[in-house]
Figure 1 (spheres, rainbow, N blue to C red):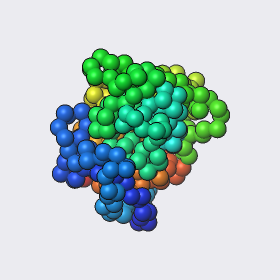
Figure 2: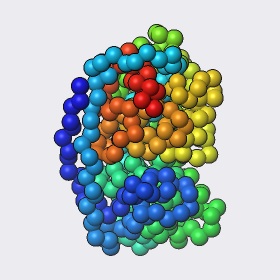
Figure 3: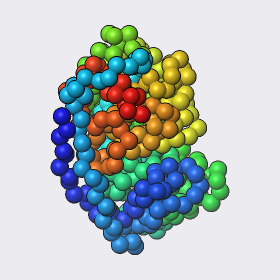
Length: 326
């Protein structure tokens, strides 16, 4: 069955999204300036209302039996942030705490430390994967900041990297503290589906663009040591040179798992992750969050609000249907 999902109105923001022709990949890691780079600062650029995406469709895989197919589901790969847990506001809190701790003022001379509000961070984290690339882009567009680390804005590449590294390291430790507080729970259906997959002898992996130490701590806290140690593959942002939407992390996972990409199914929450999976030749399902709900997931084989009603059999049927249709 197909259930249209109601649209929600996205807040106005001064961060301009890429057009469909440019894609998220055009603005990330290419050195080319795309429409995304229209942001300067909320005080200097008029707010731009986002174009509303088409209504999402939530697909029930059990609605009809798939055509017969010799292709099997050999591996299920989860993203972490937004899939295993809803982490957007936790990361944003940790960044803002880091900016305040180091007195980061951007542009230089600002009266108060840098603060990323919810509307802006929703746009930023859905367009640029990884914490360091986020800061490099933001400082590059708005001016490298003054701070307790460098009283005057850094001018050399080495000093700029030092600034980003120090802020990111502190932010990562702060994020760990938030996760360890015991107030964070995994998203519905995640643990059950992981256990179904392992119980069926299917390989299980996690691929995240986040810093490795923070992902390890997050997984150990949320899925438990036994499930974490039972993963057949675990990759984080430190393990690959290019971040999502580049497909390297998923291509590497398939190699480590020893399976064909077409027999892997990826669970993502955003267009950035969807593009990475598609680029690796892997079918992808989406479990959207509040901040990604209005994105265009037309290339996903199914879209869900969470995994609470999704079974392993549903995933097998979805994979078979996608390959027959493709």
